[in-house]
Each structure stands twice: as structure tokens, then as C-alpha cells.
Amino acid sequence: MRSMKSIDSQIRHLLEQKEEILEKVLDKYVKNAVEKSREIIVLLRQIIFQNRNSKLGEIKGRIKEVLDALDKIIPELPEGPSKEMIEKDRDKWNKNYEYVEDVMSGKERPDLNDLKVGLERNFTRLGRDLVELAKKLADRLEREKDLLWSEQQEF
Image 1: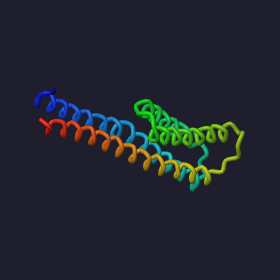
Image 2: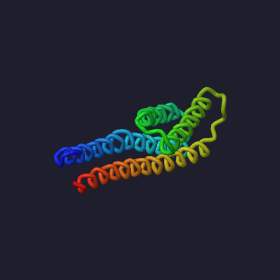
Image 3: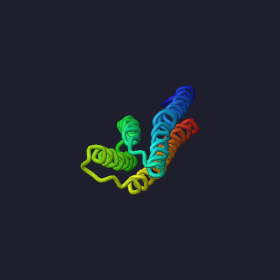
Image 4: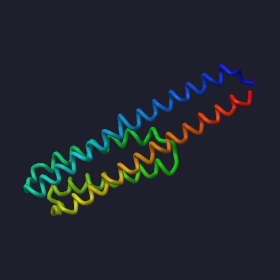
């Protein structure tokens, strides 16, 4: 049987872990991915309204930054639907990256409006999925805390 101090320390440790996980996921990676994807949308609008094809290289670089942020998030996730959802988001961003590469190399004729719409959709989906993921992590940690708390109450 566990002592009250042991259970209290486990609850404190779990709450600290919850804060660390949420901070790590939300602040470090999620904000970075969302910020980079916002910058891409701004650049796309500049291209469409100002016909500045020279900015495509900058967009490609920003998409790569979003992909890099997602590459850091994915290995940290537990296996399951949330991880699969974020992996699908990454695949969609990767397709946009490849399209921009093809436009820059001359393989594809640029349809910048379609690219803008696609990236805006990806941005919206990524933001929604990352918020949902953070909520699931928080809920899971809350359930674990409640379980430890109920074990303590049994004493």
C-alpha cells in the first residue's frame, strides 16, 4: 500500500508533467508551426496581388519550417488517431512544398490562387488539429491525476 506522501508526490509530479507537456507542445512547436504557416499565407497574398514570383523561394523555405516543426511534434506523440491526424497534416504540407518546388523548376505552371487556397486550408486544418491534440493530452493527464487522487482518497 502506498503512503499518503507517496500519492501526493505522484500527483504533484503528474501535474508538473502535464504543464511541461502542454508547454512543450503548445508553446514550442504548435505556435512555431502556426506562425510559419501564417507567414506563408501573407507571402502568397503578396505574390497574387503583386505578381512577385521571386517570393516563391521564400514560401518554399517557410513551408519547410512548418514541416520541420511537424517533424519535431510527431515523434513526441503517442500512437493513435491524434498522431495519424497530424501525420496527414504533414503529408498535405509536403505536397504543397513539392508543388512549389515543381513551379520553381518549371515542371508545373503556377496556379498561385489554387496554392493559396490549398495552403489556407492546410493552415486552418493544422491549427484545429493541433488544438484538438493539446486538448486530448490535457484530458488524458487530467484523468491520470484524477485516478491518482481517487487512490489517495481510499486511504
